[in-house]
Image (cartoon, rainbow over all chains, first blue to last red):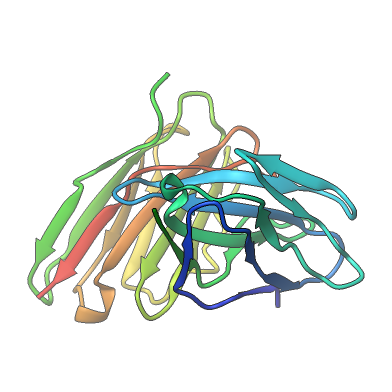
Length: 112
Length: 114
């Protein structure tokens, strides 16, 4: 079945550092790929998405590119801020399927 | 406009009791999902409703779990004879059409089974 594997955390960085959170997936066909974020005390919210190969999703300075050849959707940000501290979830929605399949989540802490 | 709301926000119950969790989706959204977030299992899909179609119950972990959606809007997740392993945060989400649409999540109900 479909699955998502993302880098284990926690990840701790200093402000203005470069961020990469790795995400790889297993799926048949052409899934849609998502990054969701959960800020402290808040609900899950969509950060960005990509629906076909080579698409780049971007939002709030974060980017991720749908790489079918490597089955990856790594999240990147060039300069992180303290306010980016949160738990990040990579997820996929299988072709023709409705449910989201999530990775385990990566807790990110940014220190000033 | 209003987002997805869930009630109660917290629920503490004794092992063996039944509980009901409620979800009010965004108005006009045809698709509604339930997920469970627990320390050991991460985020797991439970059940999906789309319009008047039969729900996808493939994620329900046992027959103690059931859900219904009345009038294509409000949904109730019921857990019978709760067990300690049912302790988790239960999340509801809705989307406009289903499929690969963005899912909007509620704040969740934290269930603790003593």
